[in-house]
Length: 244
Image (cartoon, rainbow, N blue to C red; front, side):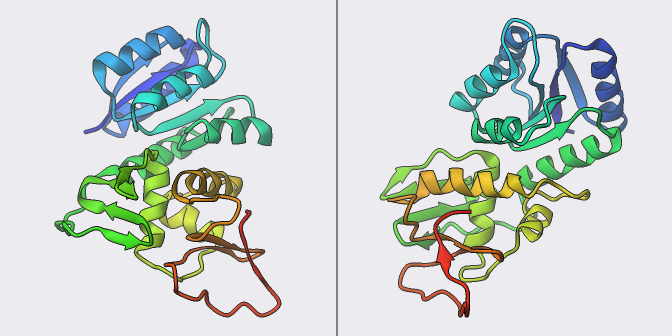
């Protein structure tokens, strides 16, 4: 079963999280501050990080940034900061999901399961041949993306969103559909999460993110991945846009 590092300085909350995750079958370690968290990530190599933002010594944002600079480990942020600005900042730093306090332990476990389920190897062997979208190559067997032959550093969630859309080119998806199918939400999620992830993904795969060729928005409707030279579907009274 997967191992999880919980980074939380409030003992009572850390105990609740540990108990519920262990009841769900996970192996759990706890770090009480940011410095300890970074040491544990390096030493224990957990499969997922549940990360509070308001921590002693090194705050959660700095921990997220340091971890993301050298690892694709999924990060679930857990914090009392519930403003949209705080959520966007966390997601832009590379977090995969965001849960605010007070939280339902059942929902937290469901979010953890959803993240890890998307990370598991599929039962069927994956093709050796990459998916090709213009200058992009998506190697599903090793979860790697190349642009012009060079690796593109994506977070786990960015990769999963790109792969999902690339397997269904030209199809329009609403944000709640993507939350269900890519994030695996069993509970309603913040639609802004999708917008931020799309923006971050564009910055990495598009030659000019302000004028995207691949990852397109249909205002008021959703997102789609277009293969170059493939005309987008009809959009009467709507236009394809480059921004969420």
